Amino acid sequence: MGTQQITAPPCVKPGASGVIHSNVRHTAGFTVIGNHLAQHRGLSLVAVGLAVHIQSLPAGAKIGIKRLAERFPESETRIAAALRELGAAGYLHRSRVRLADGRIVTRTVSYNQPGADAPATTAAQPRSARSTAVPAPVIAARPPLTAPPEPAPPPAAVVVPSPTARTASPAPLPQPQALTPELQSVAAALLSNLRRHAPQLLLSEEDIRTLVPGIVTWLERDAHADTIRHALTTDLPVPLTTLLPPPLPGTHELEAARPRVIVIPLQNCDRCDRAFRSRHPGHCRDCRTDLPTAA
Image 1 (cartoon, one colour):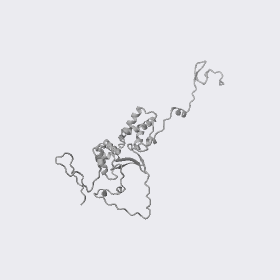
Image 2: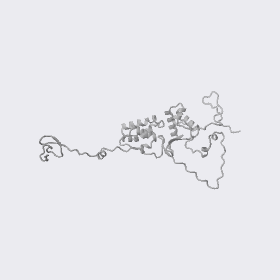
Image 3: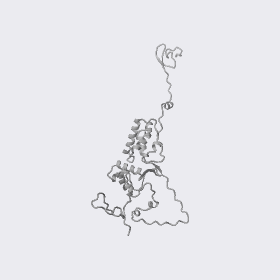
Image 4: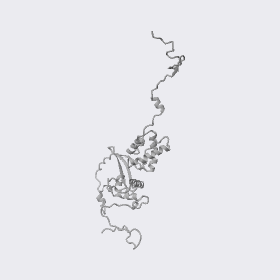
């Protein structure tokens, strides 16, 4: 007989207040959740429940904000806030990855115990094997006589950090010449309105404060709001630096490129007071006597 699993106090005094556990041992179709998550004091109840749901899903399941909002009664705003809580606590890491064909996908990694390295054998086990009550014994294989061939390296993927992901060395954002309150207000409103065009870009107040100087730089260079919005919803935040338009040419550059037109000033005839164009004052054509006349 197997060892009895005790998950609650065996005896409860009659009439005592508090929860009373009535547990049945699971033999299939269950997920192990640590008390560090179930009793986490820094996470909201929505975040804890969302973490439990994500850890119960099979590998490759879609957990976008819209998909979760269709599954649960909570709004997209609350689900996005819960995802940020899990990311800050280390239970979730979301990043944007550019594939070899140019497509950008969101890669999500769920950690059932943040800070601990997962054993290499658990990733290769099928879901049915992980759901059994007693784990299968691991038999060490005899080392081969010759060294096995080295596996081919996986294709390189360019990882684009999401707005909420914090990298060790983020790309520096462009800095404006004058960070005026008017431009800051316009930039903040543009960033806050991004979620209406791309629901996955639900930026926090800290993200907006970080990105405002870069948006102000675009506005200083006379970039249209639709142009900025298209760049942000395509690949945030790389375009703020890589696609930044050049400064508008100044007045002296425009004057240098413009062809010069020589204007001859107007003069008044000294004899008949008629206006005529000439570089020097004198007489008009009719009053000049030095011009040859027709025969």
